[in-house]
Length: 437
Length: 169
Image 1: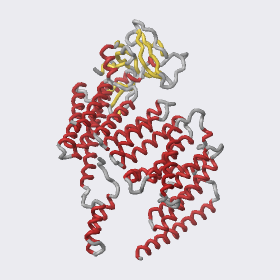
Image 2: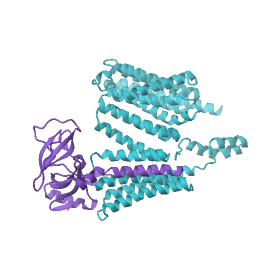
Image 3: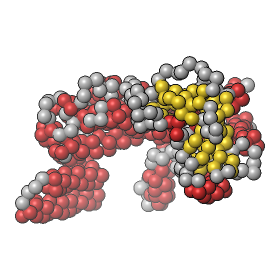
Image 4: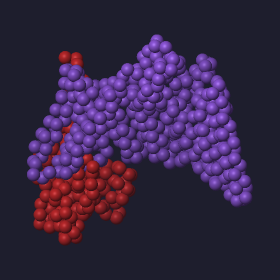
């Protein structure tokens, strides 16, 4: 069960407020209003989500208090009494939560939150055991143990908050594990994927799925940085998973459950992809991205990047075969996945800094043009202003990056300003005319 | 019965993790050899377990002509019986042969020196922090630590002695 349903809440609140007025003005008949109310679940007041958020916030604070109490290390209380007190608090939170959620069933959200509190107190108990026995072979072992307990709770109780805690702690542990164990295969991103992706699918949690994407990308990148220490490995380890995540919904029928689940993660992938390509558009940074810079035997990171790229290609091919997405759609995977393949191929050319820079700039410019063209067709403000901002940032960045005459800079910036004013106002005029028509 | 399975798995696994964590330390405390080592502590903070004194032992610094270790490589720190603290003998890759007046402790190479990681943090109550800090300053940041070392080389911290005062159980 996903405690939070973030998607479309603001829209539903607005629609809930507007529907009665539309009925009064005769814009909608009763049947249409009822259908809209059913489709967008307008009769649900939203208090359940708010209450769940309050419970989670409350138990986070209580859990923080318990952890602080343990860290205080009260000398007057013997070790056995501390263990008994904090240990029984953990068991009591779990059992009370189970009773309210699964046995009695009267307060499932409070019960669920209490099991989450139980796992937070489990973390406090780990700190307490380490404190009593002065354990410290590696502080991250405790974080790993906490992550394992939270992940187990996530699976055993089918609990997204427990799983999210496990994922966050697991990511911290994985990054430290990579730091402490050089030369190992990049199994930690695979481990996180194997533990949390199936649970996200089972629980239909977009939040857990998106967070898992982020965790996989972070650990794959940290591994690449620790193993190879070169921009090429880091760049490829970010770019390929981003391309995979942004292309996944396109591989599925648009109305399917899978596409709905993968969409927020795809937006995250798009944002990550844009940032990485923007970084590669700097000449000084692109010079560090050649595969030729990598030392022999430092290709372990490719065990993640290569399958991710293959997955992105397969997803894009599936979208192409289905034929319901146009090349000109800026949110289709064609440009980003094609651009990713191009950049990775160019990185294999010796001394590839210049061509990678040119390609990255061209890809961003093309994406900006696609956004603007799509906005002109659909008269949507979002893609239009994103396209304008992207184009503006690109032009200004290049003029700041390269040494050019101040007069030329002045002319270009003024021209950009005039272009934004002219095109922006023309677009807004067209939107207004279309609205009146 | 099946509806209780989930919570049973959570409780058994989380309690199991908590019980298994100190297993080697408890075994060393019960059946290990008690030694005292000279230490040069500092005191930072751990958000989970509170304030602690980081213990750096004189015995962790090997002789200049010591063999080269890889980062994080396991090693043995051997000390010999003496008063008031046991004295360093060697830092070696292989465990030295047993000797009635010597004890070998399992550690790792941190790039500069051996680290007895399992005995590198001594947790202290927040209320005693200032007192311990003052005693450390007065004693030139030197003290003694009592440990028990298990047959497998696992150390378990018992108490810290600074400026004539003893901390820990």
